[in-house]
Image (tube, rainbow, N blue to C red; front, side, top):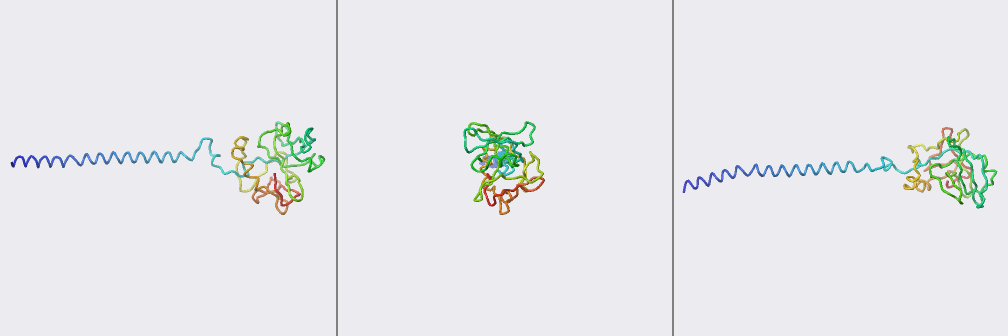
Length: 224
């Protein structure tokens, strides 16, 4: 009986010695799995903010996405099939030569006021046809109760000079499809206007070249 008891005690003692290592191993394995899962999640989270297509995906859409440049209208003619459109030849200082741009100005400005005008052109919208004729940009105008007029660059600004906005840094988006997808023009449009002094502004910040501010004769007007 004593031997049996002793054996039982020994067995009990042996059992007590074997269990803790097994429990510790199980706990260690569980902890290692938990840590590995945590690392996986952290890595996934860190990778998430870098979408395909680069950092521009995270860049806020503002006026810096728009490529506005100084232009000089060297020629203009009436559209043969539209009483609203002028077909303009505009020097933008580009190696490829002047661009052809159509504007719905025929019912607002005489053609002689268009020929020779110095203007601000939105250059990165891509080409589209107006009245069956290709247009390669948009001439910006101010329109309000005082009528319609061109947004005019400051004296001395050369064709092709970029119009910039203090506090809105960054290069224009040159892919028209991406610009359209982000609705950059539509997003900025409500914030484009002339102030009480006739200075062309985006959110109150002046359109500017190295020579000064862009202006318009029509004050307190929407720019489009």
